[in-house]
Amino acid sequence: MGAVITGWGKCVPPAVLGNDVLETFMDTSDEWVATRTGIRERRISHVGMVELSTVAAARALAAAGVAEDDFDCLILATASADLHIPNAASRVQLALGNRGAAALDTNVGCCGFVYGLAMANGLIESGVHSRVVVIGAERLTTILDWTQRDSAILFGDGAGAVVVEAGSSGAGVLGAFLACDPVPGESLMVADLGNTPAHQRRSSPYNLSFDGREVFRHAVPGMVKASHQALARSGLSIADIDLLVPHQANLRIVEAVGKKLPIDSAKVFTNLQRYGNTSAASIPLALTEALEAGRVAPGDRLLFTAFGAGLTSAAAVVRWGERTERVADSGRELHPCTLSAMELVAPALKFQRQWHQNGQ
Image (cartoon, rainbow, N blue to C red):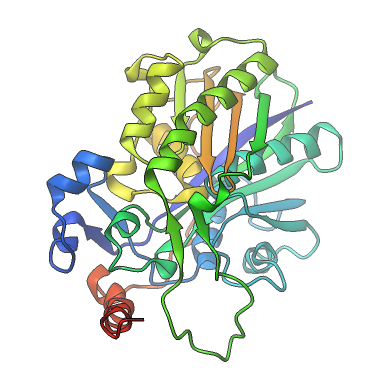
């Protein structure tokens, strides 16, 4: 029995924060950001991560032709959960109307979706579960310090999800590789994102430590190694891959990975220019858009590869099934948004500016 992706869906909030808006409150420009990252805009969420996840999961279930409550396991990959007790996955499960499935969160940063997919594959192949919803979702903009250009320009909010089911057609997850090197982990860390009592208001911005050069130095070889390992476990080579769907962190990283694998750039799917780095959400969001764009055909072999906080690395090879069209569309929508992206960001920006001006 293979673990076959039968449904897919995405949820991106409507508020768009373009590079032109960043120019109005930080020392940057559209050209500066786009040249270094490939990013033109990102989304700012007006709702919590659980709601983003619920809508993406509902859309994936509809695409699979499955009722919203008809699954036996839900895996939520996120580094920005709305709550930790109980886990955020259980709140998504509740919103979908399911009362009996297993539900768990996994936090491995940008590798979260690939880790979750590999877990779903193992659960299905071992017979523990038969239908697993895997979600990658983030609302990272809530922890950004908007006065810190190097990190603030990179991240955006969103969610993507897939339904993974047992099948015997030869499609499914062919191989995967998961790893973590903790030694350079402090190059991407939020050291104070711990147990802060809910009734206490934060007195300082979150301490996001981000060493872009160090992350880049590890990201490219990490994604390439993970890809080769997953391919070897699948009995395939990079020449057998029809589409590479990498973590959408930075266009320079994506291009460097493509060259080192190597794979034709026409076989690499990117959408980071519209969403920025959505961490665990980036691969399922990109996969959904690749399907919408007709970039995936029945029987295609796809390679997912990612690198993230930890520093984690992961890759998975998937043979697509027979269907590339949704069975149905979901009626799930986010609560309406009445604010612009700048209006959503403004309170945090004001607080952060005041904190820095006071010399703290």
